[in-house]
Image (cartoon, rainbow, N blue to C red; front, top):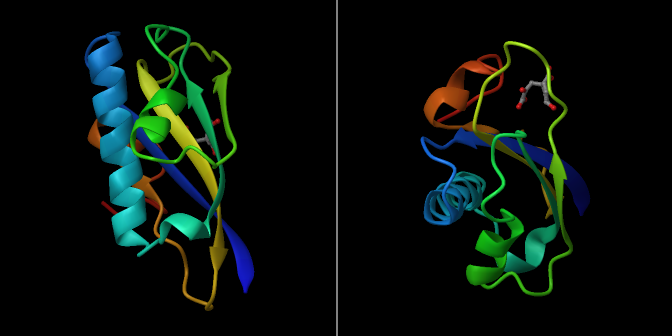
Length: 120
Ligand SMILES: O=C(O)C(=O)C[C@]1(C(=O)O)C=C[C@@H](O)C=C1
């Protein structure tokens, strides 16, 4: 059994509690599905949000999905001039039991952040 880190990102249109929660769940569900993760595989999740998102912590979305025992942390993404706005990023550490490469998932406007590794 190995540990792998999986990346993902998604953008929202509006800084609202509802959209941040909905988009965070969309991202987490896509990562879980594309990597065939079981709930017990997830070790921890770090979220970042750009400074223009402050309506709710993305971790709330994970808890609403039932991840009440997974350690979660939300941070502000460092601001870089000209960088993508209204973006939620995740870094998920998981138990991984084979040598396949993990699927990193970049959705919506975030698809251009890492075209080298993004698999939508
Ligand atoms: O992967 C992303 O989400 C990016 O925006 C790319 C990148 C990078 O340059 O590697 C930049 C900033 C993030 O904190 C993480 C990674």
